Image 1 (cartoon, rainbow, N blue to C red):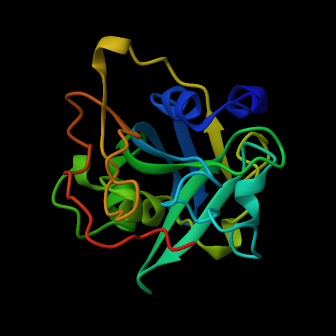
Image 2: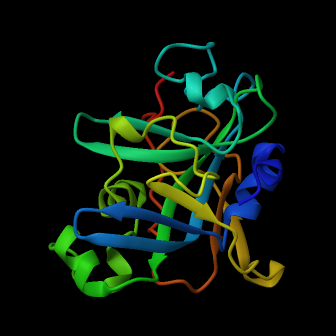
Length: 202
């Protein structure tokens, strides 16, 4: 993936990420998914964003440069992963919400043994991060570098007729913004649940 393609506002970046491939080297083997659901968070003018109140040691990756993983821990239970976008110094990122499995289902099931079917192994941001083995050590990873453990590959673009938009999931602030994008008809897209509290505490 060319870093320049992510040096844009969060909504065009989110749209570009649909159909891209995210792959990671894990102890069980390489796992890859095609991104089918993402969610945009702009920065200082977005009250649902982690960087709404400014830069901290935790959210620094969101301030650039683009093309890096921002990985955070939520509810003391799960990791979630974002890809930074916008130009260097301007905060913004796209949450990776779901992906369709492209590699060996046996490897995926070894990593996600509780999944009922292949479509569920990366259905939702926490499951996607778990499948790819994403954790604190991956925060800041350059996914545009072919030598990285986690890599973002430019996939086949998704036709505009198949892209849907809607409210973001699990946020209390700015929940009405249609900044969640997904591929219509994909069985890996996570179910929508309106939020009563923010998952992205600033």
